[in-house]
Length: 467
Image (cartoon, rainbow, N blue to C red):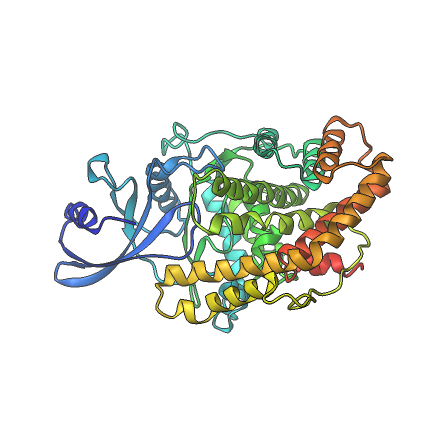
């Protein structure tokens, strides 16, 4: 919780500030905190935004610039014509609030699902992909030396980015054969990256403020910025996790790739390498698959206690099924839909207890809660749905996987040990990644897991079409 007394004392440094009226943490944002403030300045109420973290604000997923660096990035991007808020005040150590900054509040929508599907955005969606391309082109034209960003930003070649992400996965100690499989493909198909520019690296639907009439009015969340291949930004924008259920619109669930590229080329004067964009689209699913597991690990080791962390950790299978669909599409066996409750005469059964808690979290529990706690209650209810599906489908999925692993190795073994053995074989080249039985195992095991974790995910439906 933020200390409002310290907050108000810090705000006194703003010219014209009189008093703090309210401070609300927004539900979005699992890695850093964002607050909406209502203040009185020069006799009138005004909204501000606060972006903060307890420490330096450096992301665990990247050696990014930290929050103080993010404030400088906002300024440099605005100067280059990238829409974004004006930074008003940067936190200092003596403020006792951690690191971060205050900025102007920009009205608009940030929820990716609403932007992709909301009827009020129907008209602006027609031009939104092209506008996103134009903005990215201006972003990539920022002179990192003149703006002195080069001193604080890391340079990452495509190979270094893949290797770093892969090393993060290996350090987790969780065998995920599809992640190993994807890593080997990426390392064997690296793009040339003939130019290196400022890269936002989290430019996607959900990190943009969109107005129903104006389109993009702000680009947010620069915590992963670095110097690298500019095609990373185009590929991340079309990564499947950020389409919010609109599978036929590659760009953020709201637009077409051709329009994104046309906008980019019209401003940049360069020709987009479409193969590189596809590489970074796949890398996006690979990177997010690893990052979600990292978030789950942060809950397990106690460094992060929010319920969001383990819930996000179970989203890795979504990203892995996207890798399956891009690299090794093919037939799968579709499991029966999970029943609401299991058979048995025990009163009450475990699944009945879970259903009761889930329904309470979605109903009566949220009524007196703050917006943040309502969000966490929904996260908790969704997590219980995962547990219920695990109870009803998990044993069958594990038995199927054990049988497939036995077919690959010709011997039985404990499931975790067999997965680890397969991961090592993929890493060392001991097993041919072109083997049909290996690819069939990867497809089926990832599909079975995503049907437990998130059966409504678009990638699961795409894969299930081959059932």
